[in-house]
Amino acid sequence: MIRRLFVFVFVVAVLMALLSLGACTDLAATLPERPTPVPTLARLPSVTPMPPGPPTAPAMPTVPASTPTPEPPVGRVAMAANVRAGPGLEYAVVGGLAAGAPVSLLGRFDTWYRVQGPGEVRGWMAGQVLEIDPAIAAMVPAIRP
Image (cartoon, rainbow, N blue to C red):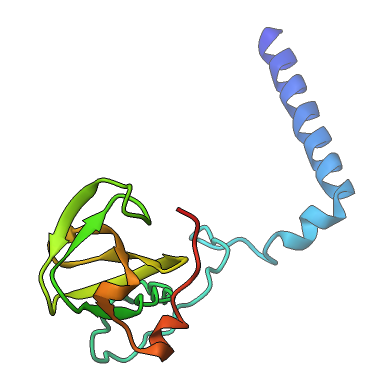
């Protein structure tokens, strides 16, 4: 009796599955026309082989070109003189430069020039002790001490 009940439930389950499968027309369209001996899988896209070529080097990162810092105008020390902490004789002497030494002209205030000389000597020198071309003197920016 239990065996007959089990068979009956199994047959009903199979029939219901077939009926529900028949109601799904989209699913029936995707099934193969007839069963195949080997399960089929969806076809994967094919890869076209590339012929071997010369190896390519990895791209080097590019560094954006920076704007070069303009070089300050240059003058020369006419005679050995002191370099001072400020633009005037009342300021302390911070160094000295020999005659002929080149100096970068960083700025001017009145008749004094903010200079940087050899050996990182930096300070102020009077215009009378410097040799500066007039065209270069016009390029030196006016600054406040």
